[in-house]
Image (cartoon, rainbow, N blue to C red):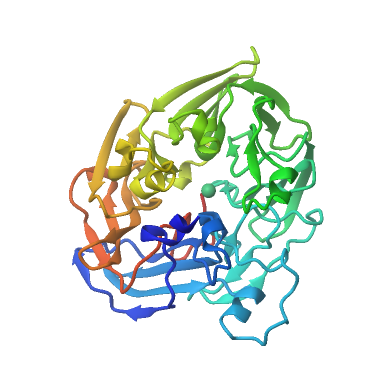
Length: 458
Ligand SMILES: [Fe+2]
């Protein structure tokens, strides 16, 4: 859709490098590392009317912070062979067939000291340097053919293992893969499925892997009809969650009310139950005429391993997406979570002639206190498109001792700021705004990569 080439979605056309960035406020001196976030940034679109946000070539935007200074900003396309050709860096016709060289655009993680741009389904992850240049595609040994690191992985903060759930269009199976901190695959399990459900994310508790098998499935018919994102809502397909012991090879399935689970906040084991906090969407996000309620909301699923039932409760019904947390709590009980309310996402999905929903006027970050059942909201302006926020620990013992950072459009400058909030003063003014030299299109996911670490993802 051409709408995904406009406004906050519009791709940028240049790669910039800037040093000694201006800052309003005071950058915390304990924030030493890099914030990197990736998203689609189309490089030549044949059919703008058919373009979808999720399809553009991946571009990573990074800011380097050290000793209270913002040392640099860089934005770089991931250099797949196709990107190199489009940029004129290689002669035409030397690319691999489409399907093996897409520039991953969905997440950027670090594991085993490697910075990886990743995406679900078939693309290989691409390794990047610390300065965001492309090293090349990376194929882990021991993974069944076609399966790769997926868009959303979980890093166990205690073992350092990277947990992956990967699906592959055309193969009625999902692969659970565990990569050790040295980068070696130590465990793979194939779980058979009926059809090809989209498993964009999953959940990890201390002892279990939780799989989302929902009515959003690949449709060969939609693909044949030319859909660029050929997934449909199949109303006849039951929704269920699978609980696979981390060291097991057979999941146990539990029915749930139909929805699409888009992004996991976190999960943990609690006696004979597993608690999963997750952003879900109703059918309407793919079939808008079914319902006006087509936005994500934050839910809690309590999977009762004894009764076989799943209690699905709504934690916050405001439209929101991109849940993150202090990642040292991944797979263990957590109290706090952070989500984004992004006006442009809702505006983009409004039907022709339909009035804008209230959500289309709100750009905000939300801090959830899931123990005291409270939220704090940090509002940005109507045109200040805000993307996913990540948590950067400050080093203290409290779960929320740290900072929350996100790229936010600054309409006064026509460029993006990296906005840094104190997590314990969430509604207060930003502690710092790093002024970047250009726009950062509304993107997808990223990571805070502290110096001295070898891992980071969510
Ligand atoms: Fe995602």
